[in-house]
Length: 630
Image (cartoon, rainbow, N blue to C red; front, side):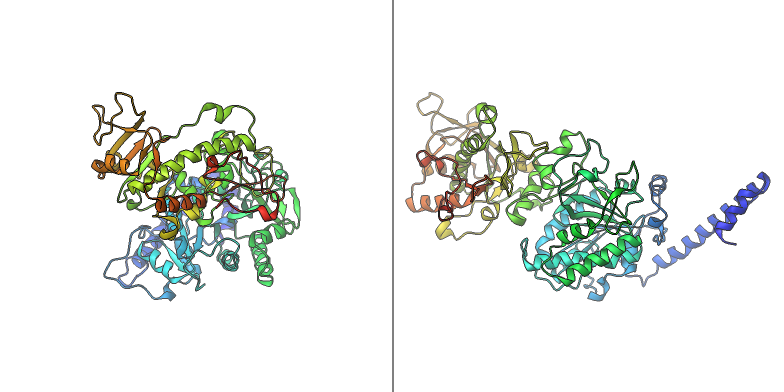
């Protein structure tokens, strides 16, 4: 007799027989549990077992409550539970062991089911160039006690590196280059196709798949949220920059004209989802010029509507059967809704994720944004470097921040005021051979790829706002090794939130020197290389290179030197050749603001704007004039 028939018979029986049936069935289930537990315990404790991947831990009462939110489709093919937990993530293999053969790391159903928990697997992939992004991605999840994850390695170097760090990894057999391929390159598009192939391979395993790009991080466990929509075949993030809801429900699909973003999306192993993955893959493999995200949007939007029901905000899409949901842009954040608008903060919501989209300066810009948000995991040596750090408190008059209209002119006036201070700080950092901690950068208007009125209509962008460094600076140039004979010595940088990062050691925090510039001629403004009774070093303004080296010669072991103000503290380099090289470096550090209705519509920032009489923020008047100021 099957379970279905058994429960039907129980339902139609009298109370006495109902009690007996219930007792018998519970006894059978408990006995079966112990038998299975013994079998799996014996299997897991076998001395010949070489698996280093974690097995799912036993379920708690809270876990059972969580499981109740899943649909029957989501629960098929659930991994058997081991009676003892497997090796956790970050537990490295013993030093005396050898690297297992490559075939050990093939993507198989067994591997996926071994890592899956509640029948969900979370996957990202990349090459060795994104090693630090991948480690950050994994650590955010493990800090949230989420361990049902796998990383696809597109080159052997990454695979080996992750294995020896205790990160569950599989071989994508891509034989890809280990360097950063760059957005939009042929190899970039190849990576996109690998993602689609992965989805098409994993869904038939019967597990739910949360597919992620490596340039995003998880801030909150997403699995309970995804379980709130058990009827959804696919839940996708989007490039929406205008809120459609004020709570944490799905975005209203009729109000999402923006592209669905495939950097974060969740698939259930339904027939509709598998059909979508298959047709999407076939589309991309047939035409290598289609961008994977554009292809996804085209195929999903072939049919869009009607709503599945009145409450869930799911919509029928693709073939009319697939049920699609759009994750709220306020808490499944893009680079704009998180770093520019801080939409989640204004709506008093807790963000689940941030994806570094809507940004500039390539991979270096993405890394710097995550660092600004204190979301990137760097090794200890990042927080304690030879030579120490230099920082300063920026000074911006209230009038530059708030007075008048927020427009191109007022924006550039405020930015230029800050650029002059930052330029001085770079010079002092170069003289003292210290790493410069950049200040927060204030903007009055946004930066985008197209003409706009200053901020996007309907967005929650506040004016002014602390803008990401890549809105003004060419971060990829700032961190690049430039020829010293042309650009002078390298000047390392740190993000504005650096000194507030919890990863900063107490040793560095306690090694601090406050510097207060003073006006020459005042009685307490004497040239000295020692601090006053309050532990503050007074530095005469307009000091030259030689003076700076003399004054700070006694403080080489101090980790952090902070200026209370940087304005007019440095008069220049002693050597003209050194000055020229420094100026050349500074000129290449700033980028463009974009865009006006003019063609070309961008306006170049100029680090030495103050040396050009009547400088104004105007776009190049013609293509021939479209030259940076260096």
